[in-house]
Length: 185
Image 1 (cartoon, rainbow, N blue to C red):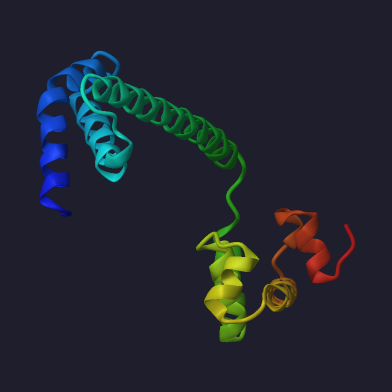
Image 2 (cartoon, helix red, strand yellow):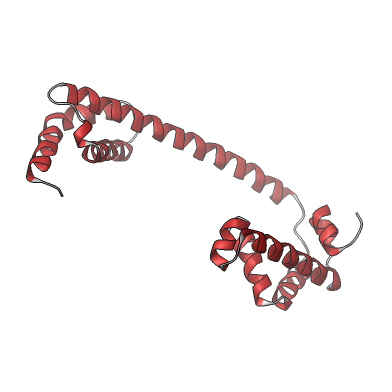
């Protein structure tokens, strides 16, 4: 954990300002768990940046500044999370309101997917199910980003053709699906 002097200095700072920081943070958050997280993050930052922590009473003010920024980061994270939840809720409501594909479409899609070559299934799964970008898929596949984009495009075209051959109405899935299947909108 470092040199004994470093550890001793950190312990002195911790013991001297723990109660003050906890009270400061607790007044600004809604739960004990959030307070504990913010306090731990504040002291983690202090440990990592111990040479930057001023001596004496100035250390308390420095720690308040770190705690304030930690709390601000937490609020930004919560705001982003809340916005994401709202967006996803709206999308799910839209999807729930749209008609589900007939069961025979789902069976046909599964069968068409299984008929694809394993390499096509893998690139489609990485991008569609795992949510990777083509660049990230390239890393997983061990190829260049350009090669991954080409593989993905060809795999999508082959899947669209298989779906079309199976009699799945790809028009239900959008204009891009029609284009990939080689049909006009």
